[in-house]
Length: 195
Image (cartoon, rainbow, N blue to C red; front, side):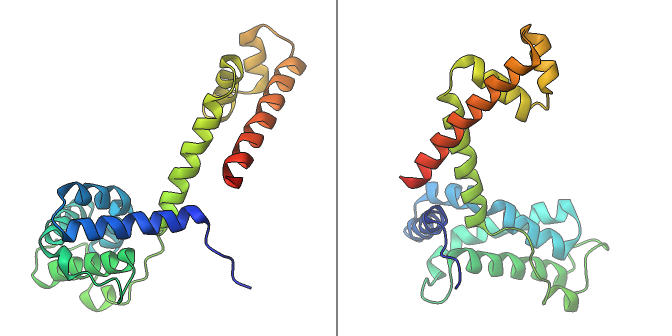
């Protein structure tokens, strides 16, 4: 049985779909949101085709300029927003190859057409961003001492021994503090997923 998509990925798809509709209606803020939600994936597609970071940056800019001018052409009945945008970006990159705007490190046009895109989908990136935000929110709910120890251990790479020495406490005490903090953090994350 196929796994059902997580509710947050559904939210991400809905947010991108809604932004595309707003852009087609002329809402300039929607273009900023679409850019924020899709730039990583689209840049990856373009970079794979063009093989040059500077060229890919220029092509990505062209994609969003063209998107602003042609957003009303998007038909949700034919493709998801991210699929349509990925195809749009791929076509813009191939157009640059055809017109000779790209330096020699690009792939041949024949090779670019079937080139797979292995980067994460925009909705997966949104899910990751939502999870990261939830983790930081739950960490912020811990007492200050526990927050600083967990951040130092897991974000700064400090060992429990280093933290114990800095705090002037036995190693076992530091381990207990962090273990209890992680238990509270897990409970917070599980509660947010259940909501």
